[in-house]
Length: 241
Image (cartoon, rainbow, N blue to C red; front, side, top):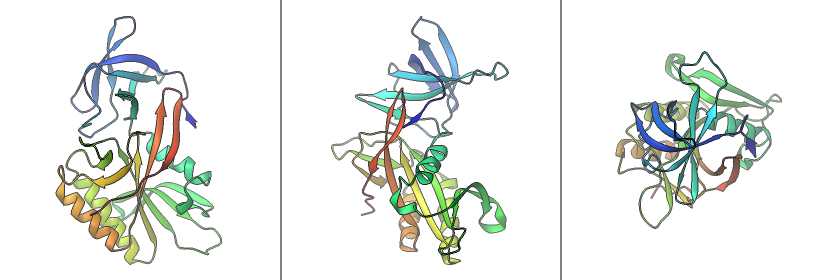
């Protein structure tokens, strides 16, 4: 389990607005404005009145010292801080917890790639012995669970031109002879399968399917989230049908 640096602060969500702000009522009744590190629409995980947990940066120079980390939807905590998945996935790969990505001795973050080096891949895996090609890994924080009984997690929760660009960059990586992975970090344990959110961004779904056909490997892993920390809960089937 990846534990949080400090004990999280309980509260109740009042509203989330302007993408990066949220108002939260603390247990003592105080209303605070906190940083919401999630640029998405946060569909299915931003309902007012729900229990939330906040982290404290303990940095007095920060304008908003507190950050929204998770919200409880029904019986499930949902991790919404998009600053965490890259670190979580990197630790899991380094510990050999992702079987498809074992055997790489070096992990480098934020390496320029793509046309003119204008993109930065989340994680680049290298084999110092040179026995296997480099592996480019893009990590996507996934919180959306569409309504219905199928218990899918889906990505994206808003139209994303940037996400489509990443898929195109990964296709170019495969064409050059390297390996490429799109890794969906599902920050909730109540999902049983993964699919693209075609109802929200059909163009992303089309590009994802084209990327997989071109050799980009889709991986979806769900996490069990709690105020104590985040732990791996297992791989999800990816449904592109």
